[in-house]
Length: 59
Image 1 (tube, rainbow, N blue to C red):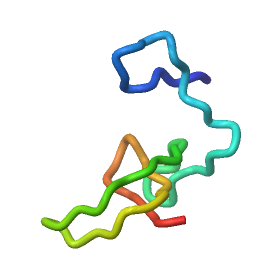
Image 2 (spheres, helix red, strand yellow; image 1 turned 30 degrees about the vertical axis):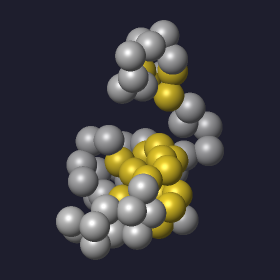
Image 3 (cartoon, helix red, strand yellow; image 1 turned 135 degrees about the vertical axis):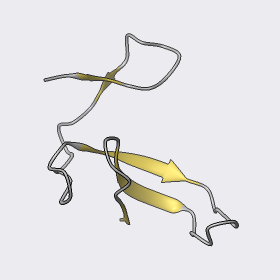
Image 4 (tube, rainbow, N blue to C red; image 1 turned 90 degrees about the vertical axis):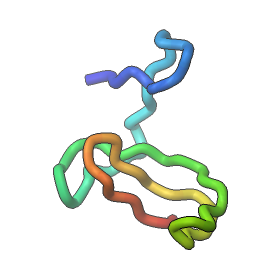
């Protein structure tokens, strides 16, 4: 099942080949790159993130 990425270009399909399932809701996760968030004191870097729930984990 291909997922549509949340971008302006709706033709782009989310790549879930290397993704694992979320431990909370068991939906496919995606690999994202984030900048440092000073408000929530979260360091920047590469994370796996679930688009359905609020789960994220640093790689």
